[in-house]
Length: 255
Length: 204
Image (cartoon, rainbow over all chains, first blue to last red; front, side):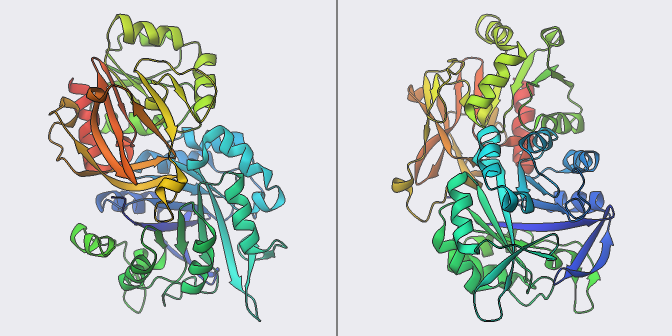
């Protein structure tokens, strides 16, 4: 049987690891390589690493940094940040990365999904949607660290990228980011119903119970979290953590 | 010495990282002359079938690989698309595979899988191995390995299938005929059991 995935998501800013609240107030939480080493020991299911500077600074992905991270990773790695072309995606995969995540470039040029998936295969292309609730219902999609609102409709666009060959969708709730009060279940429901590719949810997990809740309800799904796996306690002391085998088995065997 | 075939596809460095850590000699092979001293071969791959075959053809290594594997009988381990390339053909593309094993590569049927089994098959699944194959030494049957694929290896001769995984239906996730081995999952990203499998391959 295939198990749901529990995935730490690490944000990189100025070469350090940071954690935001609602995409703002970055707090420095340590060195990325060191975090990867700890997550290796904890045998995490997968790791998502997002360089949140690359697109905003309009620069190429930092291949050296990606290579250094991939060298350490003993688990599947998904990298995102600054990817605009199929050859960039291919280069990143050759460094020891399994999946590339793309966001802003896809909204400018949806056909890019098709182009990349033809080369690297659907299984290795992930599309990230950073979404925020509209004032009167529904969701808007943002890029550039929640600074740039895009025109496309979320629900129409997730189906479109699926049809173009995306292998996975990551739905990231800007409203819930860093609050540690649970995932946006309505949002997950709306997206999941429309898709038959894997989805991973991000934004809001504050305790393992939040992850259990999603897995109990949706079965095979990816549950990603930032704060939960880098902070401990209500004062948010930095402590890299992840459920041990026994606890994890309880969470993932519920379905 | 283990040679990891570098034909411009996939996560080649993930293998050398693990072998380096295990102190097992290995090198990347991108030209025919690099095969000197290589006793075992890893054919990695993350990508689409036709693109992988095209890249392999372009690399100029195809004939050499055929010779080393089929005539000199060097042990070879294909991983993910590297395994799929050992088949005769794939529904993902139109190009011919290496044809080392009597098999085709087929797409999972979405209707058969239903809504509970999204495609790609992505994540940790149980690998049930049989026949005490040395590749699985010290690995429990029903260990978890990481999968990332939408197409599966459809082995014509069932005796070549040495491990199966269930995703909607059972499929061959490890194949072996003589010196030729293939795994659909990613041992290089499957923590302890994956490292053990790569170690076992080096001890064949």
